[in-house]
Length: 114
Ligand code: AMP
Image (tube, rainbow, N blue to C red; front, side):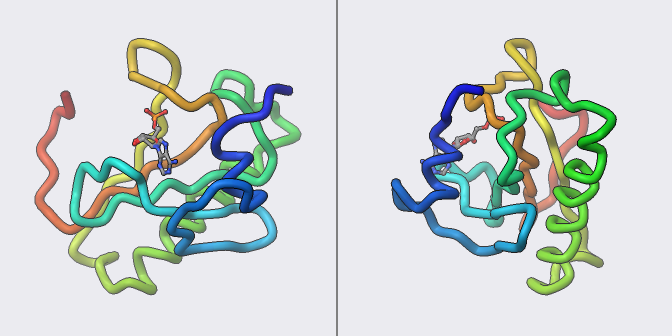
Protein backbone atom coordinates (compact mmCIF):
# COMPACT_ATOMS: atom_id res chain seq x y z
CA UNK A 1 0.00 0.00 0.00
CA UNK A 2 1.37 3.42 -0.98
CA UNK A 3 2.71 5.79 1.65
CA UNK A 4 0.88 9.10 1.97
CA UNK A 5 1.37 12.54 3.42
CA UNK A 6 -0.94 11.51 6.26
CA UNK A 7 1.15 8.42 7.11
CA UNK A 8 4.12 10.77 7.39
CA UNK A 9 2.15 13.05 9.74
CA UNK A 10 1.15 10.03 11.85
CA UNK A 11 4.81 8.95 12.06
CA UNK A 12 5.79 12.56 12.94
CA UNK A 13 8.01 12.77 9.85
CA UNK A 14 6.33 16.02 8.79
CA UNK A 15 4.79 18.57 11.15
CA UNK A 16 1.08 18.95 11.85
CA UNK A 17 -1.05 20.42 14.61
CA UNK A 18 -2.13 17.15 16.22
CA UNK A 19 -5.16 17.62 18.50
CA UNK A 20 -6.30 14.02 19.07
CA UNK A 21 -4.60 10.67 19.31
CA UNK A 22 -5.49 7.18 20.43
CA UNK A 23 -4.49 3.62 19.50
CA UNK A 24 -6.50 3.71 16.25
CA UNK A 25 -6.84 7.32 15.09
CA UNK A 26 -4.84 10.55 14.85
CA UNK A 27 -6.59 13.92 14.50
CA UNK A 28 -4.87 17.10 13.26
CA UNK A 29 -5.93 20.53 12.04
CA UNK A 30 -6.50 20.92 8.31
CA UNK A 31 -3.85 23.13 6.69
CA UNK A 32 -6.56 24.93 4.68
CA UNK A 33 -9.46 25.20 7.13
CA UNK A 34 -12.99 25.59 5.74
CA UNK A 35 -14.53 26.49 9.12
CA UNK A 36 -13.26 27.85 12.47
CA UNK A 37 -12.80 24.21 13.51
CA UNK A 38 -11.54 21.87 10.77
CA UNK A 39 -9.87 18.70 11.99
CA UNK A 40 -8.97 15.59 9.97
CA UNK A 41 -9.33 12.22 11.72
CA UNK A 42 -7.11 9.60 10.10
CA UNK A 43 -6.79 5.90 10.94
CA UNK A 44 -3.29 4.68 11.67
CA UNK A 45 -4.06 1.91 9.17
CA UNK A 46 -3.69 3.45 5.68
CA UNK A 47 -6.85 2.55 3.72
CA UNK A 48 -6.81 4.65 0.47
CA UNK A 49 -10.54 5.38 0.07
CA UNK A 50 -13.89 4.37 1.54
CA UNK A 51 -14.26 2.05 -1.47
CA UNK A 52 -11.29 0.05 -0.19
CA UNK A 53 -12.65 -0.48 3.33
CA UNK A 54 -13.18 -4.20 3.99
CA UNK A 55 -15.73 -5.73 6.32
CA UNK A 56 -12.94 -6.87 8.64
CA UNK A 57 -11.97 -3.17 8.94
CA UNK A 58 -15.43 -2.03 10.06
CA UNK A 59 -14.08 -1.08 13.48
CA UNK A 60 -11.76 1.41 11.83
CA UNK A 61 -14.77 3.37 10.49
CA UNK A 62 -16.38 3.31 13.92
CA UNK A 63 -13.19 4.53 15.54
CA UNK A 64 -13.06 7.53 13.17
CA UNK A 65 -16.64 8.52 14.04
CA UNK A 66 -16.13 7.98 17.77
CA UNK A 67 -12.93 10.06 17.71
CA UNK A 68 -14.76 12.97 16.05
CA UNK A 69 -17.68 12.79 18.48
CA UNK A 70 -15.31 12.60 21.45
CA UNK A 71 -13.42 15.66 20.21
CA UNK A 72 -16.68 17.59 19.66
CA UNK A 73 -17.82 16.86 23.21
CA UNK A 74 -14.41 17.63 24.69
CA UNK A 75 -14.19 20.96 22.82
CA UNK A 76 -17.73 21.93 23.80
CA UNK A 77 -19.44 22.23 20.39
CA UNK A 78 -21.21 18.85 20.26
CA UNK A 79 -24.59 20.32 21.18
CA UNK A 80 -24.25 23.37 18.88
CA UNK A 81 -23.45 21.00 16.02
CA UNK A 82 -20.79 19.98 13.55
CA UNK A 83 -20.40 18.19 10.23
CA UNK A 84 -18.42 15.05 9.40
CA UNK A 85 -17.44 14.32 5.80
CA UNK A 86 -15.49 11.62 3.96
CA UNK A 87 -14.62 12.63 0.38
CA UNK A 88 -14.19 9.68 -1.97
CA UNK A 89 -12.40 9.94 -5.32
CA UNK A 90 -12.50 12.61 -8.01
CA UNK A 91 -16.12 13.82 -7.98
CA UNK A 92 -15.93 14.50 -4.24
CA UNK A 93 -12.51 16.15 -4.55
CA UNK A 94 -10.50 13.61 -2.57
CA UNK A 95 -6.87 14.74 -2.73
CA UNK A 96 -5.11 12.54 -0.16
CA UNK A 97 -5.56 8.81 -0.62
CA UNK A 98 -5.48 7.80 3.03
CA UNK A 99 -9.07 7.70 4.25
CA UNK A 100 -9.92 10.61 6.55
CA UNK A 101 -12.96 12.11 8.23
CA UNK A 102 -13.27 15.90 8.08
CA UNK A 103 -14.82 17.49 11.18
CA UNK A 104 -16.14 21.01 10.52
CA UNK A 105 -17.62 23.25 13.21
CA UNK A 106 -17.72 26.74 14.63
CA UNK A 107 -20.10 28.29 12.11
CA UNK A 108 -23.47 27.54 10.51
CA UNK A 109 -22.81 25.10 7.67
CA UNK A 110 -25.05 25.36 4.61
CA UNK A 111 -26.72 22.42 2.89
CA UNK A 112 -26.37 21.10 0.25
CA UNK A 113 -22.58 21.41 0.28
CA UNK A 114 -20.89 22.61 -2.92
P1 AMP B 1 -9.60 15.61 0.83
O1 AMP B 1 -9.73 16.67 -0.21
O2 AMP B 1 -10.91 15.12 1.37
O3 AMP B 1 -8.71 14.46 0.37
O4 AMP B 1 -8.91 16.31 2.07
C1 AMP B 1 -7.54 16.47 2.19
C2 AMP B 1 -7.34 17.61 3.13
O5 AMP B 1 -6.01 17.57 3.59
C3 AMP B 1 -7.56 19.00 2.54
O6 AMP B 1 -8.62 19.65 3.23
C4 AMP B 1 -6.21 19.69 2.74
O7 AMP B 1 -6.35 21.04 3.09
C5 AMP B 1 -5.60 18.88 3.86
N1 AMP B 1 -4.15 18.85 3.92
C6 AMP B 1 -3.28 18.69 2.90
N2 AMP B 1 -2.02 18.68 3.36
C7 AMP B 1 -2.09 18.85 4.70
C8 AMP B 1 -1.13 18.93 5.75
N3 AMP B 1 0.20 18.82 5.51
N4 AMP B 1 -1.56 19.11 7.02
C9 AMP B 1 -2.89 19.22 7.27
N5 AMP B 1 -3.85 19.14 6.32
C10 AMP B 1 -3.46 18.96 5.06
